Length: 281
Image 1 (cartoon, helix red, strand yellow):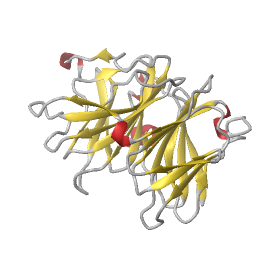
Image 2 (tube, helix red, strand yellow; image 1 turned 90 degrees about the vertical axis):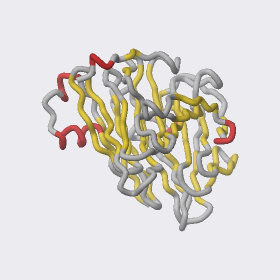
Image 3 (spheres, one colour; image 1 turned 135 degrees about the vertical axis):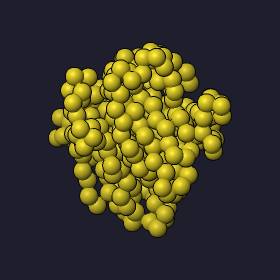
């Protein structure tokens, strides 16, 4: 088993104005999230979010971050959201074990001391995409089966953005300190995940793109200020960090899915600042 956690620093709009393609990718893109038997995480200074992949194979895996965070154990002052995008597996939280089939989610409140991830079959491992944010209060642990996810159809084929948003961790249906998390699926024939674009001045967001319809699929993820946009070309199972001042939208060569996760000072899902098309450059 190997463990790694890279650091992603904060940037102002002025910082990225002159970034090359390579610099933009280096600063905002996470190219590798899942590797059998490994824990691969990123700590971003944007609202102190930690995100990444836990891929247990032959042996269970547990995230152990103490000295890195100045705490006694990982979730001493944090909450955790999880969605399994791989094979069947399980999570054991302080001795309580729950099965986690593909697309199942879980919320783990602040104070849980041991969160252990397992795969049922090492040849088809579970892929736990995890997001952790700072917390100030303990809310109950809660399994979030995909079958129970709050589905919100959006868009239409005319605008190539017909999709369903599945809300897992959302203030409208459960309490958290600041974490929000969900799963969006685009219909065949649709490619835009959000357009017109918007910003979240009061919270940052990460996008993790996956379930590409074809191996050659790529998603062009747009970020930057509305008047000076930049793009990052993304492959399957890669993630990108979006600062709160940045637009975030993407278009793919075919349909795809993505997991979004947000944190900041406001949990209202619809609290966003719309960007009209004439503002985009």
